[in-house]
Length: 625
Ligand code: ADP
Image (cartoon, rainbow, N blue to C red; front, side, top):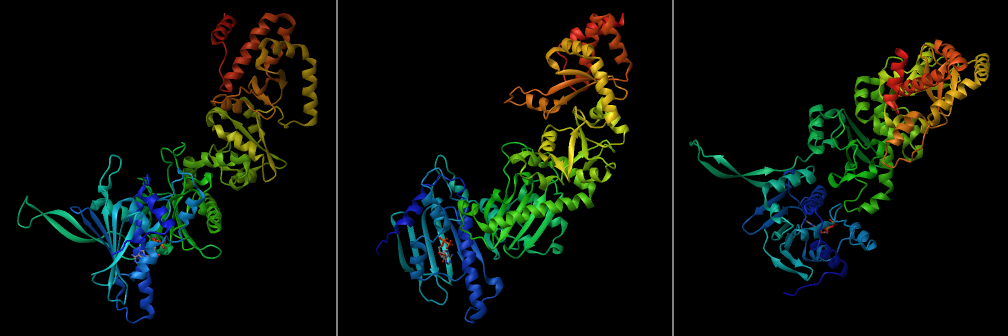
């Protein structure tokens, strides 16, 4: 019997498989099962037109066998089988698999593609040192055996085999220091791999299952029992129509597939035919995984090609701002052997991703409208991500997300959407007011907020670090701009009021300059204001950078030390104004103390620290006695 050589490229791929350091060696089983399933399909389709195929639908099956003693794992099907010629052509020459082309273009050894996508039959060599394929083509009498120990070639010779189909025997490699190959001889491993990768193969995958059972008639004597088990559930849940899937089924599927202990908040099933044909089964979790806001979190959807999983986490299917979505996409348009590199440029995949994004958004908007409580829960878990999404990529996605975000507001201190805010706006109001602070309660007590609320304007309360950045990137919503109530240009006054204030500030120029001098660098100016109602003092910022943003930026590791331009404003109608004017005339020493105390108060109200608390408390005490 002469040994035949593999074709050059096959040899290379084989070499890659054998020496692969890839950790997902387990996918070999998926590949072989998928080949078996294809062979069953071929025969099944033939049976539709060829009466000589005398098989019932239930007869088609895949069998897995484990022989620990001989270290063999067998995968057998009763499908179409292969003739000697087919064995030669199919297994001696590498199939036009996408992964090889990809590898050829990327000579970089670090690019480890194996296992991410189909690599076909040769993946068997990742776990075995000897592979034998016995096959009897349907309708033939003579079976043939293809056998290979790896790169140095293969043999094909006649053999005995009962019944048509293919039986692949893998001799599993010995364990090494780093690799535990023996696990592929454990029935539990095999079962879980089948569940993980091939659960929805249309044909039963059977195995003799060994267990210890109580011997009949005894109380503590056990015996080994072998019974046949079907390892896969066969029908992909998502192949059913929406009303055929019970909530329990969908919930269990989500928990098992995506490792959550809680049921999902929502399941979205979308079956699409057209420029791309696919089914997407998506889940919105109730809570963020513990690592969600960390670098370790990997987004992505499972990707199936006609029921066979080809990728566990396809990141290209989800934009970052919807990275919390779990689920899968099954499309017959995608080939099993598509490489990640090719996927990225796959037009179908891009269409699917765009559709999915739209679908998620519309479902979220629906939830927002129809089940507010549920949406608020969702937003509590993932709202921050949506707000980051508005801010990311220089605001490229802001308009897509603006309808989804919510902020608590002065209206009922409950989260409101921007649309709801706009719907309630007063006549002639052309800006959306917002205020920033640590908590709703603290913002609610801000001196700047009092008068605005009294005038009947609603204020959005921005309590998260990302909020104001997101709002500033958004810049406007439905033609309405945003205004921070702590910004100097509040534009609440009539022309008359503006004039009056201007005059007041000019008349007291010296007093205000003196006060600025006592405070020093902390403020760019001191002014009288009419924005305050009962409170004596507040800080406002000039320009785009607010005090809150300064706080956020200064807490970041790459703090560049940027400072907001701050103005201290004194309530012109508060008795303190009169007092300050008098002190300017007859007690500068006291004026300095008053100024410093007022400044400290204004800082504390903003949630900022006071530079010298001891000095402050001493000054207050002096005034008390
Ligand atoms: P692919 O499945 O992507 O074509 P493989 O390397 O896995 O690539 O397999 C090469 C070919 O060998 C298959 O296309 C098929 O024709 C044949 N083949 C593999 N396994 C079987 C099987 N169990 N029964 C019949 N034919 C098979």
